[in-house]
Amino acid sequence: MSLRPDLAIIAANVAPGSRVLDVGCGNGELMAALRDQRNCDARGLELDAGDVAEAMAKGLPVIQGDADTDLPDYPDASFDYAILSQTLQTTRRPDWVLEQLLRIGERAFVSFPNFAHWRVRASLLVGGRMPVTRLLPLKWYATPNIHHVTVDDFRALLKERGIIVEGYWFLSGDQRTGSAMANLFAEHAVFLLRR
Figure 1 (tube, rainbow, N blue to C red):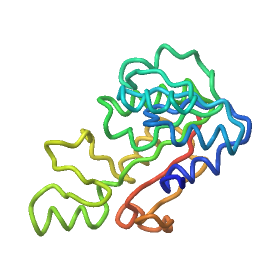
Figure 2: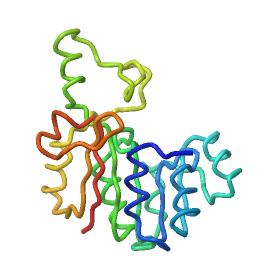
Figure 3: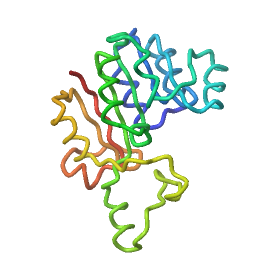
């Protein structure tokens, strides 16, 4: 099974043998790849009970929990990497969750959909409605996305908080794209961060 493109980038850039916490791990797809291909000690936190059961059936150590409330239970620097993939925009306090990731892990991977992508802008401009796209498939009233983050918004938050960017990758569709004008042309962003 091939990983979603943002997860493949993360998996390729996690050091072998690392201790990893995947927050919002879904069914454990990334965790399984990290365990099987990178020999990582990967653990997960997931809100959805069905996804927790599916991940556990794969032999993965996943607990049911909420990024908005349960991250303080983890000790400082208890992981080499804390990962939050396609989950930041669903949390109540993304800034607080980001701070927790960088407290728990020496480094943090964060990936998110870019709500400033030109297709999203065009949908609003031409149709006057919130977009429904391949990457944002649910209507506005059914989406779990409560914070519409953009690449530039995220960069501004990192600068404001003094967070260091060690790496970044941008995706258009399932292909990598350059960083020039990423706020306009990237559908997804992946950042590797540290304090």
